[in-house]
Amino acid sequence: MTENLLAGVMVFIGLFLIGGVFSLARQGVKIGAVICAVGAAMAITAGVLWW
Image 1 (cartoon, one colour):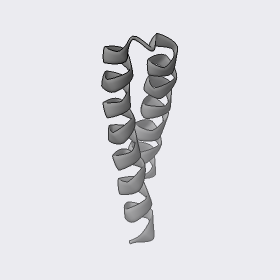
Image 2: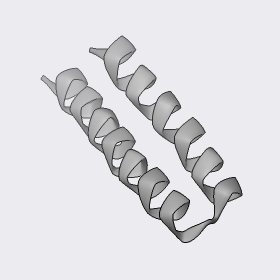
Image 3: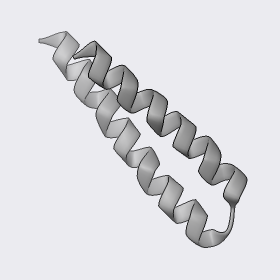
């Protein structure tokens, strides 16, 4: 059960960071958006592989 909970948390963090990508892109902070996009991709990948 703990593994699924941690995987779900990682996917949630990834989705949260995707929201940050859109927010930073609208503000014109492209470097921050790229960093958030990389973090989101890593978090979602970790969550899916952990599942």
